[in-house]
Image 1: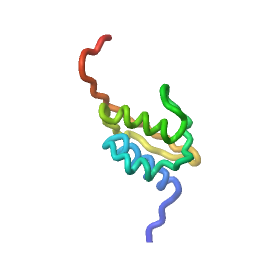
Image 2 (image 1 turned 120 degrees about the vertical axis):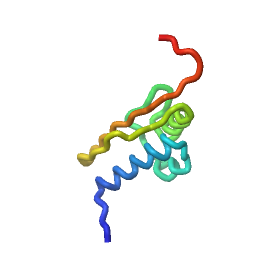
Image 3 (image 1 turned 135 degrees about the vertical axis):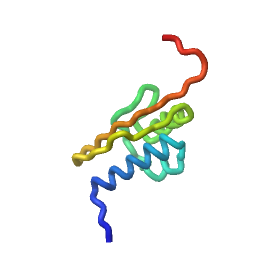
Image 4 (image 1 turned 90 degrees about the vertical axis):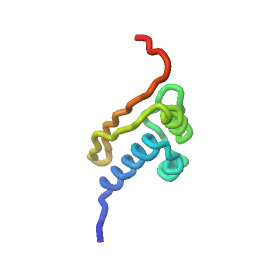
Length: 95
């Protein structure tokens, strides 16, 4: 029988979110992973600090990005991740 530590379980949730929701647009997984009373402590401009705000952010970016999880570590209760987002744009880019 395999036992999973809290740290490993937390990493698995973050990995699924990054790879399946952010990377592949599988929003049925989003509904499974995020509780209705979820609070986002790293709110992005134009969103709200709740489940609906995160879904809005992911929906907006999903069609134009690929998410690659580069690093994932836990020092409970803190989980750290480094995700590289590769964005795709159409049209002119002005620098």
